[in-house]
Image (cartoon, rainbow, N blue to C red):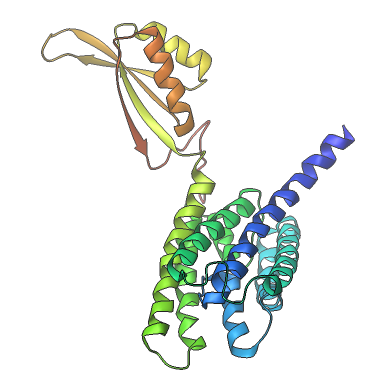
Length: 295
């Protein structure tokens, strides 16, 4: 029992470590060498590195201290502990990796591909850390603060905050020329991809689908769905316009990853079944998400 409890406590920190490893690799291997400011604490630390020569790991740690104090007061000490851990691990990884990476980056002549790869890896790292209640620091903390009380996607909050950070790209160039503007554009391209990736990582398993099932064997299909998928099933009275016959339509809302089971079960019961499926923006209530900010 003690071992299980210990593993349960350690697991989030192992996941955060993995997320920070990915995050740091993206920054030191693809972003910093190409002067790409990708937003967040890493983006600010990249600017500090090129302006004052402060190592990225050191700058990353300094930037996060202020936000960390705010997070501990609002989100509680448990969140603060995980964030302190993430910042410490991230600072160490950044400090170790930066000297080891090629000066011109892993893809020296591919600035655009470096941006794309770094964006996907950064979003993945951030999503992994946030999924267990942690944070990679920087603007991620702001995202956690807002989503605690409001139903706003973390990716959109990160996009807004990082928009301002990325604008600092112009500070690391001597002149606002084609290269500087290009660096700014790459930063914003990365911002959009990171936002999408974070949302996908965090909501990929919680996305829902609404299915309508048309079958003469509605009793048997509904029973099997209830027993196997464990989701509520609603029967809707309907009437076929062409045949004039009374019908029953099965309505079921399930997680997106459960939709394939719903389709399979209905098809097994009635090979002639007719079904439609559509994604839904949000599902709130028992078995799904809670409405935040409403008592």
